[in-house]
Image (cartoon, rainbow, N blue to C red; front, side):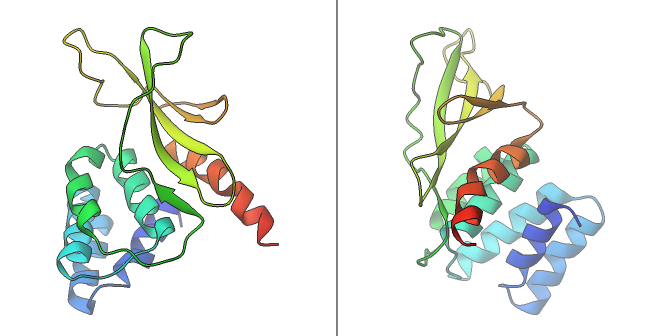
Length: 166
């Protein structure tokens, strides 16, 4: 089972059985975007608290399927509970690295146990907005992951928490 499906099934298990079944069925028939939308809205509307790891798993899965921006408002409405080795950075304040004028680094997920941060690197569009999709994922200070490797970058971020729990 892949990381996305495992995360979705674990999160769906927090929902009432009928809603959980709907989320998993969406995933099983190839409607991942709809399943993520159902999951996020059901968590928010049901007042189901999620920890930092769970919130980040939803965000990473939504990023992988290209729906992070549309799901972020509902994800921010989800109740929080203590716990988790990572946390989403809510402010999304972009940082322009001094060595680059074409990429903007947006801090995204922070490790709760060490100073590492996972960021998204976006191009600046001609009209001044950031590109919709990330060009790279950056694990501080300078590990780059390709645009298709969001789960690899997230797994690398969580490696310190896995190592410290042994």
